[in-house]
Length: 121
Image (tube, rainbow, N blue to C red; front, side, top):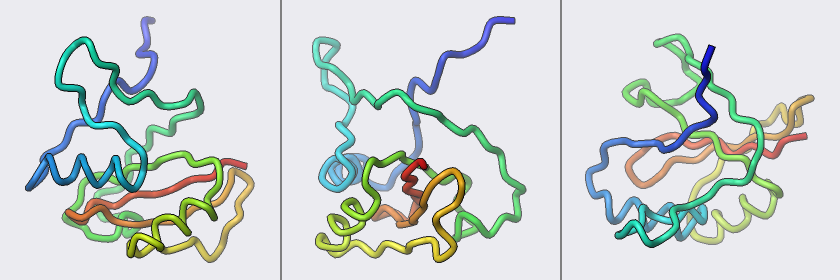
């Protein structure tokens, strides 16, 4: 069977795509989509990706109106949390971390989309 080799993009609706793209660049280091085919898009580091459908009624994402939650791998969760909090962004650490697979924290982007930060073990 032929299989996909990874996630090639994540596309979602936004109230103000330009402002949201700038927020992701400023706070998480994710380059916006290039304006031409000559420019390089953001490249993620190689690593595991979890593809996990959840029950529709899950509380894990917070706001039930949000159909997805982005999970980003980070090298140093403490440094990322400090950087975000210094920018005035509320971050919630998982009180039960660490787990055998690592540590977690959560935040929301300016449009309320849930984001999970994961420092793999």
